[in-house]
Image 1: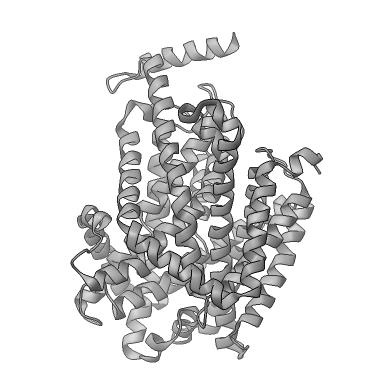
Image 2: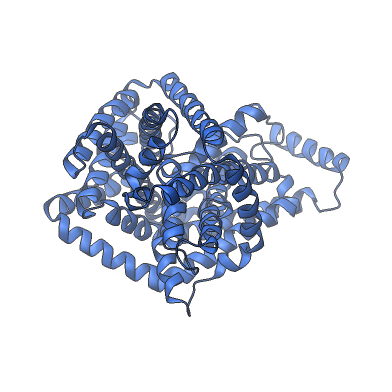
Length: 522
């Protein structure tokens, strides 16, 4: 179970105290808690919206730079390390990481929302439909995966190549030196833990809302905070049992089940949905997304009030959510990427999940809008029930809804279970075997903060979730900047030592690798 020291690190104590206070305040004063978080998040989006947009663009540019830089030839591990997983399995796990509750929740509802309230076009027009897909592709495209990739690269490089433990703070040693072993390191790790808790709690809250929405639509179960709390409680018992008993095979089976169920839904929608509209919008939307990528990456709409409000509700909210998820996803994809080159890693991370997201939003978005145009009631449904309303108008609708509920529940359990491990590792000196007790505490904390945010979120439950994501991302974003600088500094120094350049051929590179291997043996 681990010793007492590893259970109660300074990071654990400070993080648990902060989360405990937030849960207590939110439970006692939910309405005021929601108002305060809403006020802070509004201030953050209006004051730092430009910063989020610029930062994400810089991070994406840095990833592209690594692909073409000699640094990209460096391996995430020792020169002799081989990839732990076959390429197909590795790509499948990236696919699994790229899929989540958010994709199921927003797959139809986001394009529909953009169609009804587009960033710049008139509502419910052809221009609005075009903007709907372009905007969804932007929110789930290259930018979030660039952030995940930078965090994962920093962790994998420091852990597998430099021999550091798995803490976020240790990735900053090239910049902060030995200060990462002291109070500065504790602050960095507390920020990463807090961001992880909020990011995962937002996903759990969204999952509970959609499960409740589906049960309400299919079986008439009341749609309210009490039922959502019961859903969170039931799922918490399931993932805590898994976390305590260490049923890793069970989680592997659930992860495989996620991919099977998601793939089944996608194939069926392609067949029974408006197939030609799906493929046409996917093709056209992808071209529109790529054509306007640079402009929309930096556009904060200072002279367009309609788009400025839209950005605050969507893109900037997503930038906060992705930033808060980055420690969690980063640790996962770092763990499975040992032995890969930096170039190979970046190309895969910016490729596979983005392609899947584009296909997913094209299928579910085009189907949702097409059905909504003939059944206007779809457009009036709340986001959590729209998917089930759309399925109801398709062949095998009830079966599709049951599969969707199973998929959301499975994502819920696997995400929470994985999060307890990541949080346990981050708060127990980077150990790969955090105690069951620590994981139980973090599992309960995740459930509690998710429910408190739902209570504070008003009628929809989403408001406080969005606010929390935006707020938690701001302090951690500065850590991500330092991670980029550290990775470049360390990677560039090693590139110089190895004599790598764009002109370095494979024979020279193999010679340099042998030199490093011999030095390691000495």
